Image (tube, rainbow, N blue to C red; front, side, top):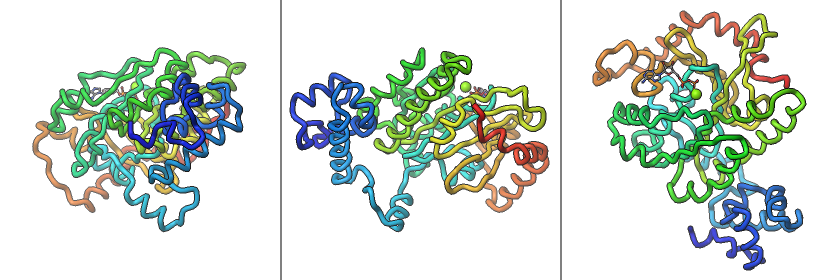
Length: 369
Ligand SMILES: Nc1ncnc2c1ncn2[C@@H]1O[C@H](COP(=O)(O)OP(=O)(O)O)[C@@H](O)[C@H]1O
Ligand SMILES: [Mg+2]
């Protein structure tokens, strides 16, 4: 561990407090920030005031060491910082366009859509892409993959890595898979992830799916508030980890059919407001024949835009790749032409969807739980 992240390097934190904290699974200053004062007080039994003081000191310490942004910062400084924010290329032109370069670090990206729309394929692809060099659009980082549905497939990672001319064994080595069996376990994995993230230089955390176990365990309206509260804890933890450890977080979310919606798209994200309000970026995936549509539903700075992509051996791919037989010949396409081609396709193939999304946007972006 980096010397200046040790708990006892904080003024006023002696051996007793250090012991109390590490017994509760808080091993360094990063962990303090990630858990926050309310949690710290709860798990250690210390007074909330004391916990707040310690967490504030921890935050100050990280700011002084340049590991965390200052509380007050000029917009121009912020602009500079944002220019250097890490982005992971999706390996496709279409989705990189949608994401304005790639999936961002220090943010939570939620991908939602119905079964089979490619959420898990996207998560697998990103687990490979993040390992690429910076010149090739990666962050040379490792992955923490929280698999709650048992759908993580190392075989797929091998295929995707090969399609990207990477050494599959090395790629597999850098993905730490945590199979979560219930929602409490899922939370625990994240609470204890600090050391793993540091040791493996993790730059991407995947939670696939973030919501499924909570949904399965808390059924019915009576348990809804407990579910939302627990899910809220998980999602906030995810965001704080992404911010503190400078990594990207991807959470997938299934949509369920709402029989009460007769017109428009009868699906909505089941995480409800909790995930929606916490994610920085929200992407909606939808099937359209063999192709897929990705729509940027909610972002602080992206326009509401959509692109067509496809699924293939290499994971998520550009739609034109599916029409090609052997993969080698990657013809460079003029950006302008390509843009209008995509637009034309969007118009042709998904005209209906566009209208429906526009007409019934509220059904998709909000949740009436
Ligand atoms: N090797 C592959 N080549 C092409 N398509 C694949 C491959 N593996 C899986 N797929 C496609 O991925 C889809 C499943 O996507 P997935 O990401 O598992 O959906 P979900 O959104 O439910 O997580 C299937 O329709 C399948 O056709
Ligand atoms: Mg899946």
